[in-house]
Length: 357
Length: 150
View (cartoon, rainbow over the protein chains, first blue to last red):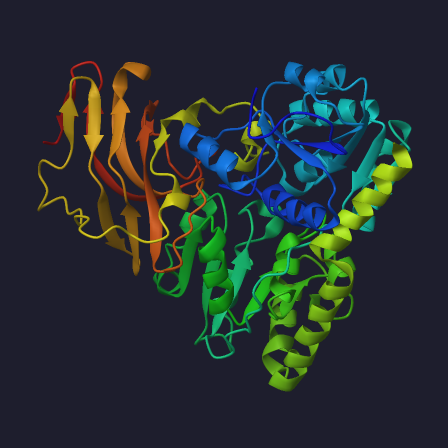
């Protein structure tokens, strides 16, 4: 094990595959806000990095940039003294529980893999089996939205573990930037997987009323489908794929767009919605999952996941006056401030830790 | 049903292909270094080179689709670590690496070494690579230690 601190007594050991540096996905963003939230509350946390893909230079940076980090194996967890072990891992290796026997184990499920398989139409059977074994073996399960809890029940998972809590993700407050209302750029941000429907933000450019618009697509994972869509010469000129954006580039993305679209068919939470409303950017999205819990009435919703509904919602956005969009964005920002900050999330976790310890 | 996407690489099988994606760590490049050569097949006939069994690809940029794709560091690939084969050297827009450059017209490039799969070359767009093909830079025979078409 290597660490940048004495591995002594902590309130909690947070076990993760990624820290907010060269992230794999949304979990890295959640960890970023947990770090700041717990720091504000002065919760003593050890960030334990396991099964990661970082290069040595990145490891050096992680140890220099983030306090209280240890990087080690499952077996080395035995040496960590903390009453709570909180798992965020993508690598659902149930053997990890053998090394956490003297701790209460909490497992935050950032997405239910059985739902990911269903909505992305992919085979994740091997990983699903491991996630389910981990669900059964942990003391408490945390889901990131009430919508995800419904899926949990639909899948019959309460038979595996009925000690379930819902804690919404939170976000550290960014430097507030106001949307670029004249940019004519529509934004999409997220992993480019089928259930997020990244193609909609390209298709909409072909619709009446969007002739002068272009799309900025920030996200991880290109595809043959995206490539084939882009064979349309007009779309090639009007769609820019930015790749997987972090830090200053992500800020630049949000400064450049006047609207964020989230046409997902499944969204366990929707960190990208928080990122947008915390910066005053309005949203057009599907009325699903965690998005409704985050946004309430402060978004323009598509009634279902189909393209026609999305097109109608985008048409509504086009017809909405600027002052109305400003009011909606401001109300969404206030929702963020009240319910979805890093400190709110950390406070909810601390309360849960105290309850189960 | 499709194969697993790269996001699920850590929870699904089939990651070996990803070991043939090379390039800079994006977070170290909030700006594009000055003086990088623009790659052009006609102007750069000897762009790629060998040092023993190591394929050397200097930093480069390629302009395409109204964007600039930048590989800000030299990429050195030890071919002895790969199965002996003929590889296609493909410059790709690296969608697996977080990039921090705030200039949105600049994107992070990487290198994918594709193998033949029957009659066709592996595609960078397919899982688990899921990157965007920009340009084929050449081919390398890791047995003969020979680059073509140079």
